[in-house]
Structures are given as C-alpha cells and as structure tokens.
Length: 146
Figure (cartoon, rainbow, N blue to C red):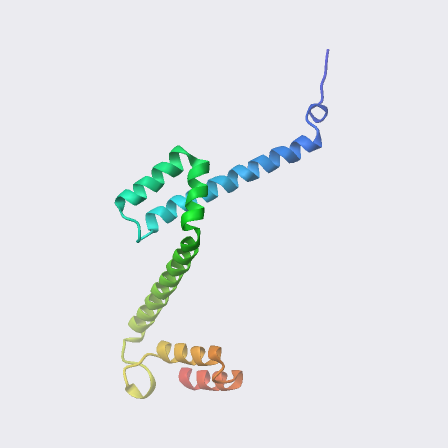
C-alpha cells in the first residue's frame, strides 16, 4: 500500500504561489468591475463611446484596461470624488429633512422656524473652521438643546 502525504507533494512555496495567484485574480476582477462601473457612470461619454470602451474592455481585457487607465485614469478619480460628495450631500439633506419632520418644522431658536438641526450644523461648521473654541461650542450646544 503506497501512502503519499499531501504536504510532500505540495511544498510551502507552492502554497504561497497559489495564494499570490488567487490574490492577483481577485485584484484583477476588482479593477475590471471598477472600470466597467466608471464607464457607465461617466457623463462625458456618449452611448457609442461607452459601448466602444465596454467592448474593448470585455473582448481584449488587458489592452482595454490599460488603455482606459491611460486615457481616462485621472478623470476616474475625479468622478469618484464627485460621486462621494453627491452621496454625502444627499445623506445630509435626508437627515435634515427627517429631523425637521420630527421637530414639526416650527422649532428652533426664538420661533423663527429654523430647526435645532440647522443651528447645530452651523455650530459644528464654526467649530470645524476654528471660528469658535471647544468650550464655546459646548456652551452654545447646551443652550440650544435646553
């Protein structure tokens, strides 16, 4: 009876090599999906431009990905930043609307119709810009919430 051990047939260096190949495949697919997402998200490309880049990336993936990164790589980062800013602005607007709806819309300081959320956001902005100190921020916040 011939018994073979798996560890003898597959040394440690082969395990590391296999792990590296797996990591590179995952990295490749991440890059490919990122580029395909960017193609569809891009506003400055028309329909034919998007179709052309998509065909190039799918039919000749290595050449297509490299060409896309060379031709449009810089604007890719700008589109990511713009998308993140739009998402953050939409999230903040949603929070303000939700907090204003709970407040009834008529709260705020002195019955002016402003909500506490707007006042707190302005205070946080002043603190972030360094216009007021931490102590002043805390005092004003306590005053608003009382």
